[in-house]
Image 1 (cartoon, rainbow, N blue to C red):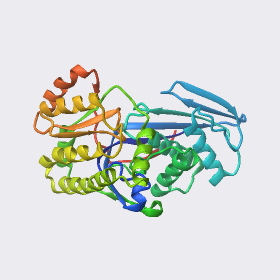
Image 2 (image 1 turned 180 degrees about the horizontal axis):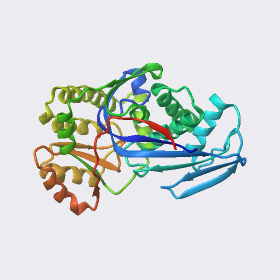
Image 3 (image 1 turned 30 degrees about the horizontal axis):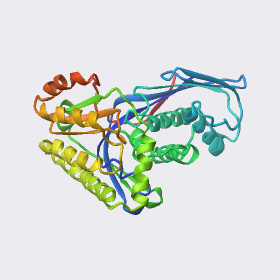
Length: 340
């Protein structure tokens, strides 16, 4: 018997960055995101040979270890090790023997929440195998703690909850790590139109999001008014986006994205650069009404809103930059687990 899971990656539509502490602790954050048909996968095959095999297929990295209760965090497949350590510590209380294989449809640093989504998928595979009594909020919170506390990775809270819940969600973040996920009930024709009009463009470069996020955190701690005011505006943007989508005012989507992009760039240095700016302006001149860098910024994926039939002109205009477009659909479901 083997145990599998998959969790969807997400695109952030509004409010990104306001889910990062200490901003969310002090002021409260709000984010609107949607999961897409790109996934992180995990497969666990139980063994009884006293070994643990960690296999990251997309990274082409495989490690064989002697089974024990706590695996050393040493820079090699630490996400996999940290999940195992937590599962043993909190639930099993004894060493396990197994082989786990993982695969992610997007590279690290792409801005689609790939690291957090992978952690959610791995937790899901363990939960399926060990029949752990974990609900959606439990899994998302556990994933957050593994990344932020156990591994000390800088970042926000939205990715873990998006991967676990799936669909279009308006998320609110408060002090004491309180998170409320509000699933949005959106008519299928609106989702279809959004899907038709959105372009997902990979710049061909990845970035270390932690550096940008650390700068953002520092700006809040040092009370830099420009950065904090920008985050306030992004929180407003999340509400604007929610209302526009729920009311079907799709002509406003691009303008709301553009509004957010202008403020996102003010949160910290490194979010944009001359190449990203040129790509963005080229897309707008070709017919896009707005867009943004996905995730913390600095590289990875960008999204553009192209109403009517303008996306074909945008695709043609961006060919010169050497990136690639990724087809996707919005998905209704979050983490899924099964056995085979």
